[in-house]
Image 1 (cartoon, rainbow, N blue to C red):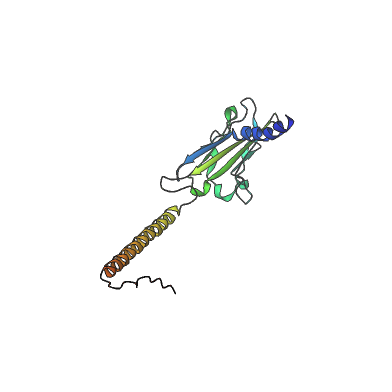
Image 2: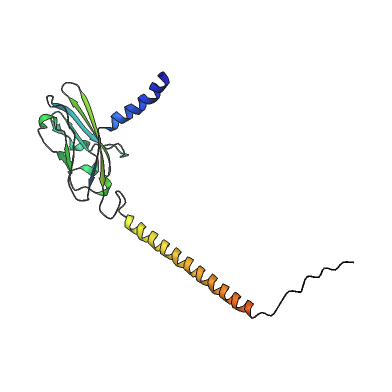
Length: 191
């Protein structure tokens, strides 16, 4: 019984950790609200929006001492992120990311620390995509065109091979009908 519990407990932990993760799909050029909700009765003393997959330092958005700090932001987010509600009424720590690009695709983490020393985290998967391409792959159309050309040439090549084989078989069949050569009869010579 203990073995079953120790095996199942990590799985249950993963399920509960992923319940708070949301996925948002948006087209390039649009503005998107990244939602993050803190406690309604507590004030936010620290707010960090990060994107863990970015290799360099810097925040998506950083708020402390009742004001945002743009100088702590990653350079790709300068001038593009602001609080949805500057007063953060009722614990609303959501931000608006303006003019999204394919490079904005990724997982965003919101971390709130309140005046009651409570810490809250939210995860959001942002997928920037358009109707013709997959997120993060703007050159996807060129790759698809290349694949189509390769497939088309392959099919053409196969049809050409079939045509050649059929032509050769027809010639062989026609020439064998006109052929007068017959193998010698089998002689069973016994001594």
